[in-house]
Length: 315
Image (cartoon, rainbow, N blue to C red; front, side, top):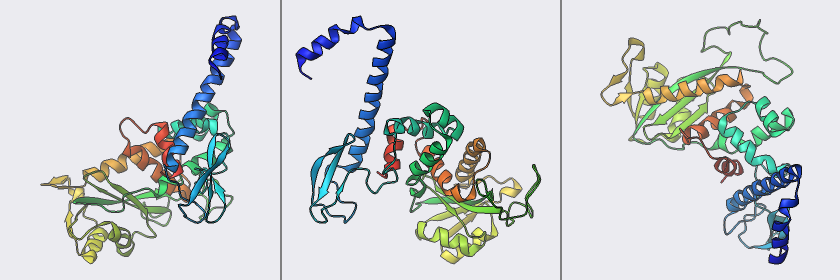
């Protein structure tokens, strides 16, 4: 717009009615959000994007569409933008993505998200799991120094499925065989003193399964602290790393520098946070574990919407 046109537009603002001013403010706010969302998406592509189809770096700009820069690969001749090949590709209503990222940062339920964004609950559900596709895979690959590990058990849930994998229980009924029975999913919680965290859903609570999960993330010089679990001790012995067992059952919390309070506090925060969802389907458990890891990483202030959107794109 030329400066003369801008001047005439500004001078005409006092003539607007109250309702027209509200409409104009809403339109300007929407443009601001759209611009911010596009900026985050474009930043994720970087200054030198690679082709998501063939991984070639021989790409050139090729116009724009839907407020996003498009590129063309000179090697495979295919076009793409910053969202191609990401979990958010072909997702509509981009103007509401930043608000949905803010809702993820606040840990809102599906009903709350649907009401705040003005979308269907099914849309809120689909968006949640598309946004969490990358964060659920983002966790510590290696723990350093003193690492703490513990097992946590989550009740197997068929929420959202048409059939049950077990015999139905009455409302309020308890699972069979205690927390380590077949109706519970074991999850290994591992965390070092620097805050690096890893959660691994185990096939079983046996030492071999724990060893397979811990071995890739523990260097030989790591000191592993546990609560005295026999299976943890067996796994540590098989890996050949130093193991310090803290007998928490006898009210021994700390023994010199050895304790498991770091990982226990993390598990306590996780379980408190998950209560708001009133049960998480087992097939989505890894998504919720990744969601909380993301929130815990940005604690106590919590992640900014732009950061959540960037993580959802995979950058």
